Length: 136
Image 1: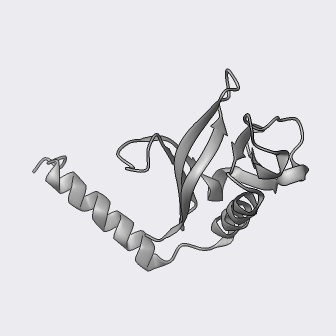
Image 2 (image 1 turned 90 degrees about the vertical axis):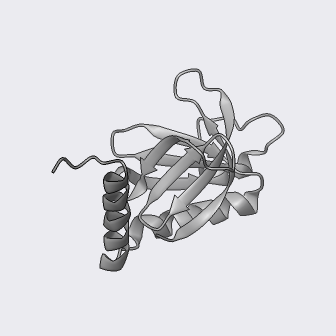
């Protein structure tokens, strides 16, 4: 599966509204993965943009949220999800915020090929055999 974009993004928590820095990977299948570090050992959150994201705004389009300390509003991103919730993100620059927005929009719209689906299925199947999930 192809990686479309990766990098550091601030993410605002939904309960306490605190900003937290995460390493993020955006995959061609629309999966946006959030990790604690760039080692990608364990992900904290996964958002399937193809099925849940209805709109993306960036920079001064973002209303109702203050960026993390020492970051201007131009660095903000807001993802609007189907369930009515929003995800607030902040990039390290205005250019990065725009690059994330455009890549997210691309990931939402690009179809996943049969080859990509087969490779994901094959990987999951090999992991299941490795873990001996199947009982014969």
